[in-house]
Amino acid sequence: MLSYLKVQELVEAAERTGQKLWQVILTDQAQALGRDQEELWQEMQHRLQVMRESLAKGLSGDNISVSGLSGRDAGKVQRALAAGRLLGGPVLDGAILKALAIAEVNAAMGRIVAAPTAGSCGILPGVLLTAAEVLQAWGRICHFLAKSGAAVAKNGQKTC
Image (cartoon, rainbow, N blue to C red; front, side, top):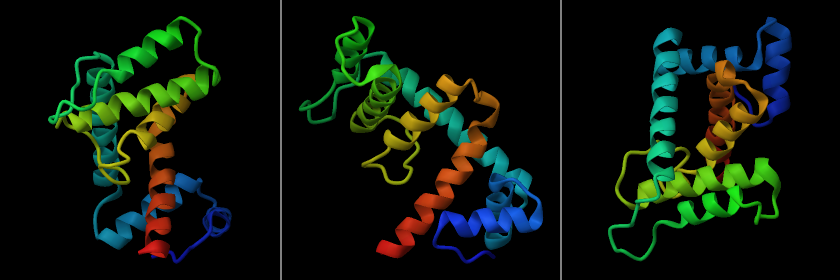
C-alpha cells in the first residue's frame, strides 16, 4: 500500500511504475481493500451512474427538502444560466448548477453518492460531470473519480 500525503508522491509512484496516475491509485486501493481492480472499477462506474441519475432528478426542478425550507433553486439557476444572467461563465456556472441540483436531491431524501460526505454531496459530481462535459472526456470520468477519491481520502486522514 502506498503512503502519500502529497499529489507529488503519487506522481512519482506513477513515474516509477510507468503507470498512469489513476492506475496507481486503483492498484493501491485494490491492495488496501483486498479486492479485485475490476470489481472496484465497476463500483466506480456504478457510483458515476448514480451521480448522473441524481443530477437528472435534481435538474427536474421538483425537489423540495423534507422540512419544506429549501428546494427548487436548481431550476432557478438553470433558467438564469440559459438566459445568460449569471456571471461565472458556462463552466463555473454549470458546475454550480449541477452541485446545487444534486444537493437538492439529497435534501429531498433522494438517492445520491455521499462523496466525500452527504452534506457536500453535490460538489464532487458537479465538478466531475462538468469537466467531463466540457472536456468531452466521458470515457475518462472514472479516472477523474479515482484521482479525486485519493485526494479526498488523504485530506480526511490529515484532519481527522
